[in-house]
Image 1 (cartoon, rainbow, N blue to C red):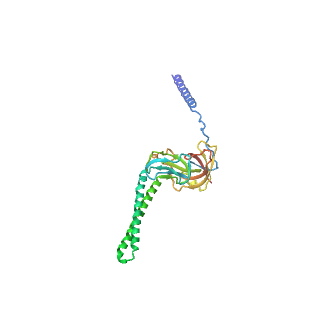
Image 2: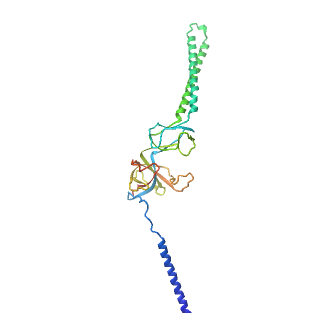
Image 3: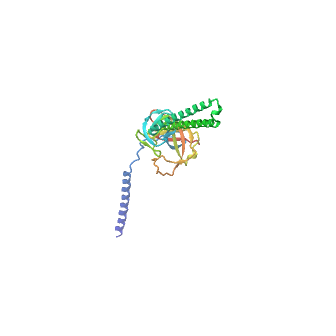
Length: 299
């Protein structure tokens, strides 16, 4: 009996060791080697640097062109990639109701001018009478007052016409700055309201670009004004772009460069640092593109 017990103990011990060895071998065969990254990350250009993510913007930020009043779009004068000067027409809203009011207003001006001329002629004839007993002083004063009233009526009619013409001109939405049409979200025949979330047109100067780097608030105190920086477009580490420091935004904001949804909630706050760089010109960098940014940290 003692020999059987010892034999059972050793057999059990061997079975446990064999099972453990089998498990180790199975796990080793199931674990695949870590594949290399599909895109080589950008190398750090400085001995000590801070990493940040950034979004490319047009110089002096993107201009979201809106509409002065709700209305129907009757004409669109530009297309994407068009370069426009400040004051160039972008799109026109329906102004038929205002155009219809111009005729009666011009007629009102004609009536007011005729009435003023008639009163002036009457006053001239009365003042030409040599006999002072033919007309009283009060009558002359009343005629002069009628001319003042007629002149005011004419001025009011002209001001009404000028106001209508200004409202018509206001419905031609013009470029507030010189730049390139980056996005066009309206077409002739569409109705534009004042509460639309998508702007009808996005305009920006892209001869030079700027990138808005978002530095985590935990390392924000280590960013120094005037620091050198370098950036690479995501997926293209072979073409680093030197950046020129512009400014540090004085207000730390919640990080929002995820999906952009209004219901998004994040607990990370970031310091925004603005850098500027020349557009390479070979369509390697686009507005709205993400970049990996390295900011030099001086010891």
